[in-house]
Image 1 (spheres, rainbow, N blue to C red):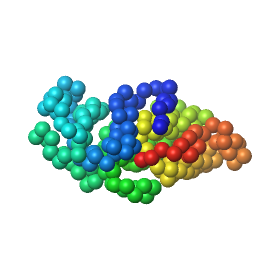
Image 2 (cartoon, one colour):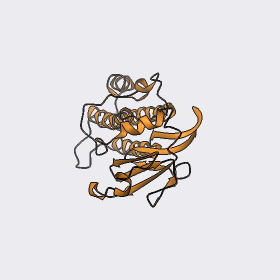
Image 3 (tube, rainbow, N blue to C red):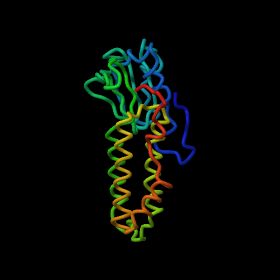
Image 4 (cartoon, rainbow, N blue to C red):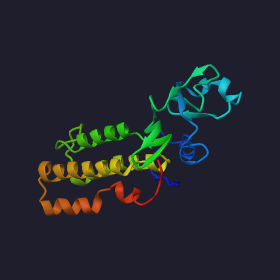
Length: 220
């Protein structure tokens, strides 16, 4: 079970009960129960009191960045019609909540993942960071600055994984390949560094996902 934290800056989606969702997704008693969910937008004071103050069997309520998340084994709770997570997964923060089977696990159940779409959004940001010779304000890009900027995005993906969400190895591997390709293009093409110097910089300074998640044995 993952309990580590980056110890760096807090991200907007940190500070919520992601560990509880992780526990639901892996505990043998609960991971097969929560097939239905609903994201109710709103501030903390918009808490759905009919659910919060009148406990419903096999129903959970969580505060998330966008509002309130209801999970249940029932299609309807306190007058709220919930979505079937096998048909309409819920995206909250950098996470995806869904129901179904996975290539690495044939059991149909509740799953708590790092959102593949969110990871692709971060990859597009890396593509922008590694293009051009200057930052938006016009300041020239130094190779070490670009590597640092890319590493900060990788740390955010790691922080989502460390919050408890499952990050499939193929997703992490694609991320690492993207990071390597984009930085190599910038260092040797845009910054015109010799190949030997570019390889040394990347080997010494680039943060990757797969060395950190490989062999940990988490289930998603």
